Length: 133
Image (cartoon, rainbow, N blue to C red; front, side, top):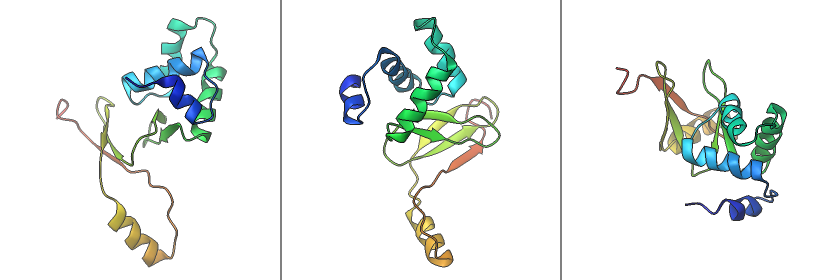
């Protein structure tokens, strides 16, 4: 189990009940969009606003505590920052799974060919998961 208050402080984030709940939700469920997170937070904080969720997500993104996963033809989802990885997206059920792919040779080749310094890669593979095939 993660020590949420400690990890928030390590990212220079103030520990609040709302932030702890957001971290707990993302730790438990993995990838969540803003609306799903808001719906879940309403169960615990009946007067929380969607603006509060957005404000906290944006602050956590700025501190590199969260990562945004941009999905094709869907709303972005958020996850706790972890080691470098990519994502598998099921087009039928919407399931998202982390997958480790070494993109270094690909990124190095493109950087060299195009004389372009790449500092971030967002790689999402779309298809159908084993349950939807």
